[in-house]
Image (tube, rainbow, N blue to C red; front, side, top):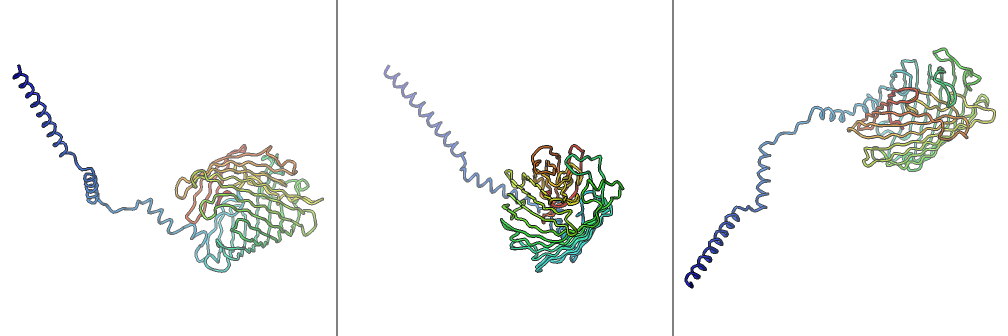
Length: 416
């Protein structure tokens, strides 16, 4: 029995030793197969670099990218419409909406390091509108200038401006037109134009005469102050204060801009059309996350207070309607001595030089200050497309809808 027990114990020990040797050998083999992690990563990266070097190709600019680079390099709108050829340049637009296709040309001096800048321009439209103007500016536009001194003169012959009547309830069915010939000469001084707080003063002369438009349909001169009166001359003087707390050194600028203006019109012939105008124009540009997405809002109101026994001529009443105000309505659609305008736009960049916008415009005109409220507003809304260049030259397209149908506008520069 003792022999059998010893034999059994020896067998078990042998079996345990065998399995221990087997497992140890297996672990040694597996350990030999486990690679060094650092060595493996380095070898993989090295192999990838070698593989990539064997397939390197020269980067080739796509046709679309090449066109964009060429466009940026030549700065076509800036060199043609701003600088021109030795100062001579073509002009597009610059007339009231509805004037038809506009062509023109001008000369500008002082886009370089000159001390002053002056320009002379002329425009003609397919409806026979004619405009000529002259401007003299000192110093030339600079970021660090502390004042701006400007003189200007303008002549306009507008043969067919729309007239729908006076008041917020005027009817489109009563549309007519009138002829306006006017001219002016002004000088202004603007102190600290690029600062947070700036002041301006303006004075000059304005003359106007009206008549029947090319439609031949006139209106009662008794009900419309200023119509059919022979040439009227005014002495004009006033000024403004502006708060500009925008970040103007980046594009697009964000922040708040507010200007408050007062202008006095004194008729030189008699006192029939003496009045004072007050304007408040407040704009806000709010970034929504990224700077390429901006909520732009505006509130503007204008009030013309006539002197006793005087009236405000209809052609000097501010109007609502058209490409800059109520875009869902015709140009000059509403006019009166006072108005209120509220605008909002959501602007976003869809490509390097293309922006889109969704907008809402609402406002009204009224004659008495007690009607300065948010009732009886006329509203329009729509979509817009903005094309711009590296020098910030803009071409604007707006399609708007209102209770009076669809309107399409084309213009340059920002909407507000």
